[in-house]
Length: 275
Image (cartoon, rainbow, N blue to C red; front, side, top):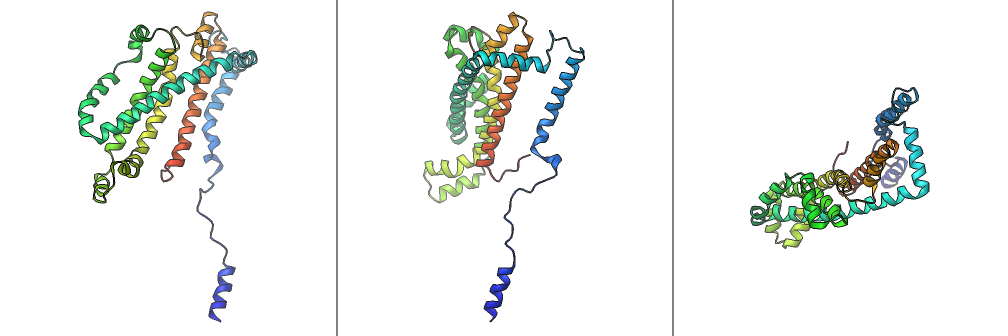
């Protein structure tokens, strides 16, 4: 009798809602992130329409959209965009991969830290612009020099943040791994990598932004394709609409790259509270 009553009572109690992200007020939605850029574009268009802005100095957003449509129809925009994307992707892959590898090495092994870290810190302070004459002598004006500059620029953010992530791991966790007899590979997989991952992702996020800056620098010399070349070529013909279009493309790509890393952070670091 008691069991039957308890069963009916449990059946009458509604199931507890699953924990999840509570829907906040509408002014705290994701759309708020785009509010300020939208207001800036609207103000910019209004200033251009009322002749407050000289179109030779700063064209209206509508003129930039028209230029984008013309270049997209001719196929020129897509070609330059893909070439720049390929250069940046290859540079990030090489520079980020080396930065992660050396960050793990110097953070894990003291001998590697003593041998390499001082050299890396000295090279880090050299501006990329100062290296351009030497890069041209080494690689010429081909693709290798451009990829080298991007890889060099993306190496240090990933390296420094990986090193900081590894050295910030609680030593008791490493000691516990040793006590439990974990192999070096298991220690890396279960302790080092999860502990360093937040720092690594911060480095990747920063490196993605730096990569586009390096791309602009690398495409400013001896390039015959790419978004940077498109902007430089437009400067020769006073096409400010195309120059602004190139800047807007860089900004949108940077935002897309940042959003992809934030999504990766939510997947890999579900315990981390994001703003």
